[in-house]
Image (cartoon, rainbow over all chains, first blue to last red):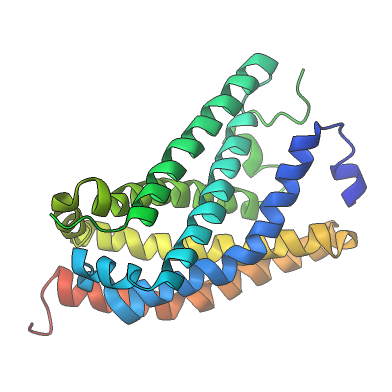
Length: 125
Length: 139
């Protein structure tokens, strides 16, 4: 199957954007996610995680920027992927619309929660 | 009516004959990752919203069952990355490779690369599981 055949079906403009987004964000996510996982799981180690550790890490502004990038790219890539999986199981245009709205709200809620925590940082109890 | 509707997962196992396991594995690994990611964002966000919960939640993630799930998740994330790179490369740079033979070759290649990359990760995570999960090696 050639690429032109794969994309021959007429799609709305945002679907073409989403299709490209999945691929371009993938290139960025490879280094972002893998560096993050290597540092947190292997260099730091999950057993060393604590409130103080997060506090220390986020004291460095660069790591907050790094985490903002992770949140923005990884979660939008993930939610859009989930949306595409769900859309594959419906024939109805109205169900598809509901899925799109639900996924947008899902994305917005968790991105906001993550972003607020990242911006305000650790709250000392 | 929407085009290109895929009715069910079992239908896809037999998608175009055989061998399209990469499609299934890519979806399953992606779904597992988004579930983890949602939990991960929520638990990490407690450092601001409910700091007294954070250490409690981290403690739950040290449960041996979850540590085993982590080893599987590591494979999923690595496979999803390697296989996703293949898809992005072929779609954007070499669309002429979307033919049965090269697809099958690249599919196997991404599975093998993923397993090779996963082995050291599984080794380290497995060591941590034995050490912290089951308190072996004295600590």
